[in-house]
Length: 390
Picture 1 (spheres, rainbow, N blue to C red):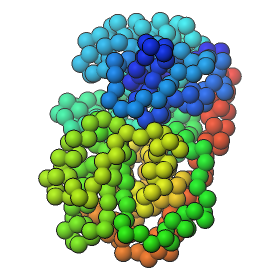
Picture 2: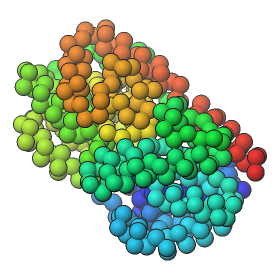
Picture 3: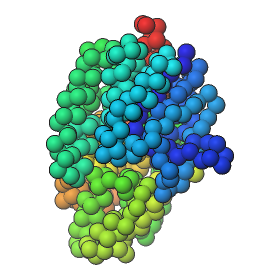
């Protein structure tokens, strides 16, 4: 059985080596496709083709995986302008396959859902985020106009779909309920977790700099960079000078550097830029932090918080998406509330080593429940059941 995977992801095709590449830092690589290849014989990936991306590229090509990338779909304006042609391409892909995995929110996914209905093609929806939050906090007037429309669209889709996978256990389910078969399976990819001894030793060792980190694309302004910098400036003004806030993410970070200059905290900020996924980048970055913060304005279930927890790190996050499924109330703040975030960081800075270590170890214990081997069992069982019901 052959399946299509459809999502608004950007891919680059390298004509020199004939491979497709993912510029997101490595989330769309062979390991992602293997999740579905345990159930399907082959996979046809539908995404957006771009000529280049400004970050490190990770190979996405893999055995038994083909790509059908949509041209002229890299902007909202182009997508609407070429809507008719794009829908024809999606339809031609769906006619070639036996099943579709539609990842939402996404424009290509919305149209694939519509076409699956027309073709009576079986599918499963993967709901990985909240379109209302994403559009509302996009930073534009048109985003606020589109937000309720996309919220209502996704609600109609999940109610109609026979099979839905959510990345949360309850948050997205409550907002976008399904009347069919559904389950909660995070799309985080934790292949291992750090051991308790390493975490204890890290927080016991004395250090002159308390390191705080944030991971989020610089392409968008809703990942909380501004709130993090406001919180940092507040702490510096109160006399906390032995702190460092570092940023990891894809895209142009000049606007973040400019905000840091305006707040007078350049000496306390480090912009790392894009790093590879896993052991080649993200893991060593997280291992060097004392505290991970995620003041994002929109999320599904934030994978990066789980990744930080899997490395035994203290974490603070905004109360969006399924973050409250991971962090206790005292470690959450309302999206945009940088003052509460600053106060929470200050409280952690005042804690003793044993208290900090206790928080980190509790996070590590929870992260163990999200190991890839456990999540993949649930995913394969759900997809197998969806196919058997055809």
